[in-house]
Length: 169
Image: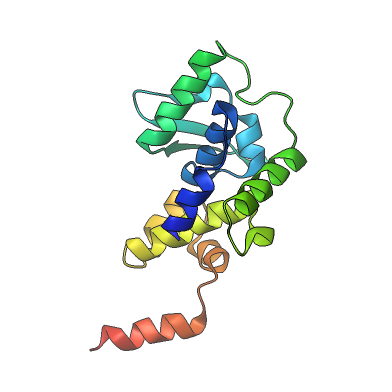
């Protein structure tokens, strides 16, 4: 999966689009959260963004160094102060950009790649890399319940039963 992410992230060819792609993936943002980001929501020193999500909730999220670098360059290049990070951008346009980048990256499943699929993919990757730690994954994604995270990740009853069987070996 990470190889596909690298291909995907290599496609956007300008600073704004690269920042969007990185924030969607590594910031685990929903489109609404991305579009509501303001310059003041980015803390370069702490390597975080504060995302304003649905239902008025705020989540401060750690982002990777590559995303910090891109955001810093983007803000500096366009001399942004306290404005929205991404002006004149609609939900639909973000979806079109993501699908286009996936297609250009040569991903065979490009038609299924959406901004939310990036968030889910990052969640699934984190879940498996942490040894299936559902609690940490719930926190990473900002879900209120473990049940929501299990449903979101698409973890099956068969997988849970298999893990339970392995527990006694």
